[in-house]
Image 1 (cartoon, rainbow, N blue to C red):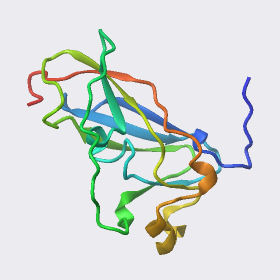
Image 2: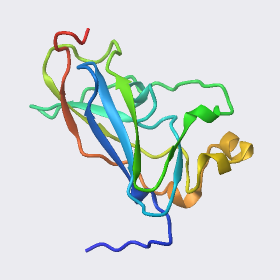
Image 3: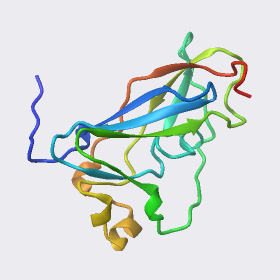
Image 4: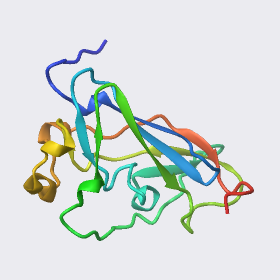
Length: 168
């Protein structure tokens, strides 16, 4: 039995869903805001919404049959600071945002096996307000609302066949 406070915003309102994208070489990442009243602004860097999500370890990959993890490069991406405004996405109450992540890194398997993909890790920065209300200083600090960063990003896994015809 769980309880939650309607008055207190929480990243538990944010659900990450993974699904097949527009082609076999694409993963669709959706962040859904289940809150009835809170808008959230998310810095996409180092999250599943990041175009480098596989390379930085925000998304994990394992063989669906054996459960063996496929190690990624765990890259550290150098970015120009402060983050640009377009690195922040806003998720209104009872809505969702989606991005497609390409499965085209050289280290990803291309053997046509089925792999399980899942989200792993913390949010980089989350604010419990519209993106337009985030100050330049807050964006520059990239720390978000501290009470929102105590929870990690979680998702159900999705199975994808990597290396299918047409995904090269």
